[in-house]
Image (tube, rainbow, N blue to C red; front, side):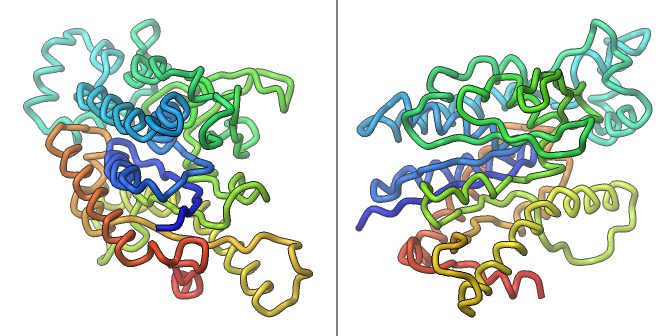
Amino acid sequence: MQTRHINLALQGGGALGAFTWGVLDRLLDESWLEIDAISGTSAGALNGAALKAGLARGGAKGGRMAARENLDWLWSQVSEVNDLRLDSWVQALFPNPELIGRWMQAFSPAAWVDQITRMVSPYDSGPFYVNPLERIVERFEYQHVCAESGPQFFVSATNVRTGKIRVFSGKEVSSQAILASACLPTLFRAVEIFDETTGRTEAFWDGGYTGNPALFPLFEPQFPRDVLIVAINPMAREGVPKTPAEIEERINEISFNSSLLRELRAISFVRRLIAEERLPAGAMKDVLIHIVGDDEVMVELGAAEKVTPTQGTLKRLKAAGQAAADRFLSAHAGDLGTRASVDLAALFS
């Protein structure tokens, strides 16, 4: 098949990012498919870093295998984190950490720790605070993550002070930038990074609040028209949520999709102007949007699995991602470079 070039936009969603692992694993099977740029947020940033490092390190021949090995390693490490919320700093807040740990295991850990994080802050833990992702993220091969070779890589985080998105790229992508992109403020302390764009040390939270993922870095002229979004957060969910957990889960889904929907609406508007010849030729890029996702699986799994990365769940998500990517390739491989496979107008109706 003729070589096709695409950009990847990888959503965040905690341990549900194992779905993206499966999607990328399947895409790497296709030698005709070249990835020119990657934009990732939160779990999407972790997946993106593993993918970029492998493609850059392995070169033209071994890059795909190296990327697949990196992704396998990443999720083997994530599977060893019993609960992204259940770290030593939470248990250390209580007089008998061992006892409270047994209670957490005995009485629904997901629900129990959810209640704790509503009452205490990561800043209450003093010296006991540990970010469970740090030991994983700091082991990425940053000489390859930041390399000029391979696809360009963009990581998004939210500036706490300004509320604006901050996109890190090139040499700016560090372990701290990736941790910032994945920093849910109820679970982790804000990540502080000196920001040359503002000339001061800034605190950052999860990039999902302002760009999940950010699409605009992929609109530069040197990148291909096709943007393949790997979606984790369900757009639609039937029924009205009624329990506190259901309500909070749906609020999170809506808020973490809002920035993406805004960018997709802007793309739809520009495409309409181009189609109606109301813009000068070449004035704006005619972006072709494609989406790989499985809302049915994500709705079934729910919010608890985002922070409880059991091996069984991760394997199921990887398989679901592989299957979703396979369906996309079977139906839309021929669309790449030619037409969008997503009807944006219908998406907003």
